[in-house]
Amino acid sequence: MVVTDEQRLDATFAALASSTRRAILARLAQSQATVNELAEPFDLQLPAISKHIKVLERAGLIERTRNAQYRPCTLNPAPLAEVSSWAERYRPIWEARFDRMDSYVQEIQASQRRSQRKEAT
Amino acid sequence: MVVTDEQRLDATFAALASSTRRAILARLAQSQATVNELAEPFDLQLPAISKHIKVLERAGLIERTRNAQYRPCTLNPAPLAEVSSWAERYRPIWEARFDRMDSYVQEIQASQRRSQRKEAT
Image (cartoon, each protein chain N blue to C red):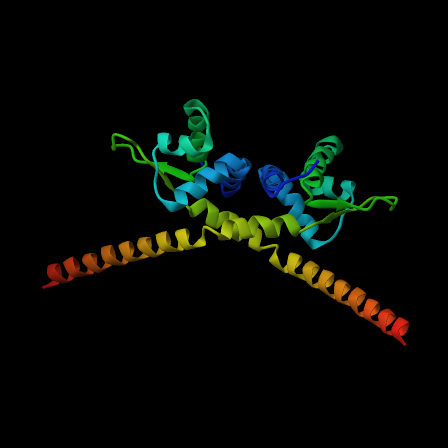
């Protein structure tokens, strides 16, 4: 089966739509870890954590060594680079909006200063 | 109900896990549009497109004017800025990995050139 960029993004975004799975990735950003090591800080039962790891693995966000006895999980950052470059396409739009909000706030502050000055005189 | 950053990210990522919804956002990045205008290029029935719009609206990615007769949809880019800055935290990791891949490829190419030179002599 050919997996398109769109299908890969679907799987990545779906995998990231869970704070537990995002926390697992943050943990693996520090170092690789076994399933047992991952289960501990999250206070989750092994079957629950295994399910989360499978979702991350299917989305290509986690790799597991096939040969090693303990099969530690490693973060694969490539799909996160794709998420970033997908979102970055919208940067001109959010920067324009934030700029407009900035000038709006500055306008309000200037008009407040003017009326305070009027009251003081 | 207090919505935490984590809950907001959950909703944003879940909303983005659909190529149709991502295409709706790309369309709205050009200009605002009514539900009818959005339905047309996607060859979707109105109920289907309305459902996608509701998911995007709940995630705060789309805003709809309450008063206007046609209630056009507008892109709200703020959650996309959050997605970008969330993913950017992992940039050092993917850059390091891509650098390693680069040097690996260069090493292979250099060794191929060396063996070609040997064969030529």
